[in-house]
Image (cartoon, rainbow over the protein chains, first blue to last red):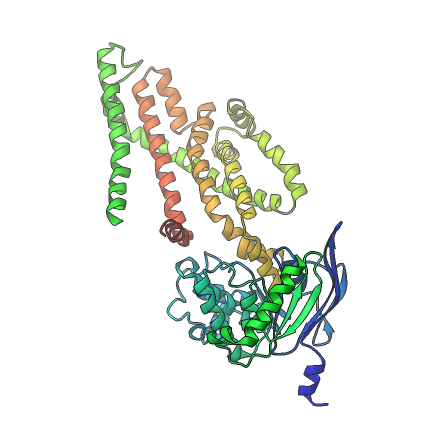
Length: 257
Length: 263
C-alpha cells in the first residue's frame, strides 16, 4: 500500500463515539467524525449545540467522559500538541506587538524569541500583515486581527487547525472577504482544517465536507459532501449545486430545532 | 479633536491652581480678620515665610520620612505581590486568607504605631513596617482582581499551545493585572507618607512626624502646617511618579485606552 493510499485509509484526525457530560447535563452524545489530511471539514450546528465543548475536548482543556480521539491512528497525547486552536475572539494580547503575538505559540513550545521571529517573518506578508509587525493589535482592523490570529495558529505547524467561528465577530462584508481569503490561503497551504460555524454559506463555501450537529446533546445528524470545484469563487454562490446544498443544510438545521 | 484635548490639558492644570488659590485667599482673609493668634490660625503667608526660614530643618526632616516611605513601600510591593500570588493559587486559599487581610486593615493605627515602636525601637524598622502594613492591602487586592480579569479565551489558547500554569501566569495573568495594579498603587502611595509620619509621631529621633510634634508642643502652628505642606508635596510627587513608571513599564495601555475611546 502506498503512503498516499494509507493516508486515505487512516484519517489525520478521527473522533470515535465521543461522550461528554457535566453532571446531569449531557452535551455530546456518541459523536463520531473524521478529517483526512489536507481536508477542510466544517462542523455546522445551532448555537449552544456543544460545538465549543467539542473543541475544548480536542484542545485538551476538557477531559471527555468517554470516547477516543485519534491523530494519524494514535491516541491524542495529553499534551495535545497535534492541534492548533484559533479561538472565537482573536485573543490577541494587547500588551504584545503584532509580531510578538504571532510568536506566542512557538515561545510556549520553547523556541527562543529571536528564532521564533525568524520563522514567523516570511509568513507576515503572505497573511497581509506587512508593515504592521510593530503595531499593537488594537491598532488593526477586525479583518487584520483575524488574519493575525490565524497566522499565530498556523505558525505552530501542528497537524490540524481548529477554527472556532473565526469570523463570527466581523461585519458581513468583511466576513465574506475573509472567507474568500481563507479559501485562497487553504488552496496554497492545504492545511487539515476543522471549522466550527453556524453560518451555512460559510460552511458550503469553504468545506470539502460538512457535519451537521443537532441541538444539545450534540450528535452528528448529517454528513454532506460539497462537490464544488476548487478554487472556489464568490460567484459560485449562485451555482445551483451551491444553493442546493445550502437549502438542504438549512432544512436540516431548522427541522432539528 | 486636538483642540479639545489641548483645552482639557489647560483646564487640568489651571483648575486645581485656581481652586487652591481661592482656598488660600479665603484663609488669608479670615486669619487676618478674625484676630486669632498665629499659634491658633497662622495665615498662609506666615506659614510660607516661617516655613521658608526653617527650610533647612524641614529638608533635614523630610529626608528620613522619605527614606522610611520608600523602603516601606518597596517592602509593601514585595509582600503585596507575594500575597497576591498565594491568593491566586486557589479559591480555598483566597477565601481563607482574604478575611485575615481585611481584619489587618481594621486595626486602629493609633494603637499599632506605638506598639511597633515598643517592639522595634525608634529607628527605621518600625516606620518601614508601618508603611508596608498600611499600603500592602490595595496592592494585593488590585493584583488579585487583575489576575482574575485575564481573558478566558486567551487562557484556553495558551493551554492549547501546551502552556502550564506558570507560563499562563507569566504570559497572561500577570500582564492582564498591570492596569489594575497601577490603580491600586496610586491608592497605596497616598497612604504611604502619612503612615511614615504617623510612625514618627509615635516615636522617632528625626522625620517630619517628630518635627510636627515638636513644633506643636512649642505652639509653632505655622511650622506644623509648613511640615504638612511638605508631606503633601512628597505625596504628590510620588503620586505623579506612578504615572511615569506606568508609562515606562506598560506603554501599550495609554494607546489601548485611546483606541477604545476613538471610534
